[in-house]
Image 1: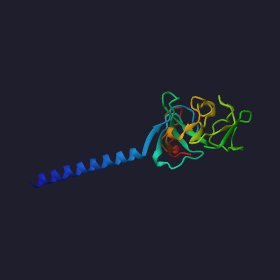
Image 2: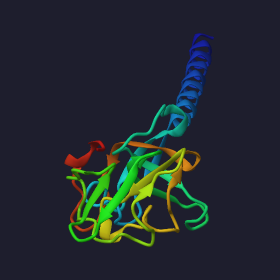
Image 3: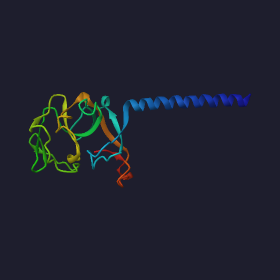
Length: 188
């Protein structure tokens, strides 16, 4: 009889554990989402295959310049997600000097230590561009390999197209001798 009671208590404890675990996972994934980098457009900040943690859109009160965001544009591969850096927010004026490779926001050249290459390619759009209301101008850090707001396929990203903000590198991508655990941590 005593063993039977211990067995029932053990099963009850196990059930509680799984209920708590399930509730914790549901809560976690409603707040955060793991995403994987596909491609080279954000090198050297983010590398192909990196596993990231995204803070969901409804938790972010405001997106600002330099935030790395995940967006889904219907005009890009039927809504496939992209990961880019916000360069300018609504009302700001963006200009690109393709001779010097500098990006200007409101007439001031950006200090972009994260950019892998200068921005020599202006893309398809005419500059300067004023960022529309409720929109963001985004660029990849690897300007030579990035399809971003310089091209009509992406264009400016509306706030409703943003899925969330990248906050953490969970695991580095594998390949090209880049599996570097020292990169794990916050993403800037």
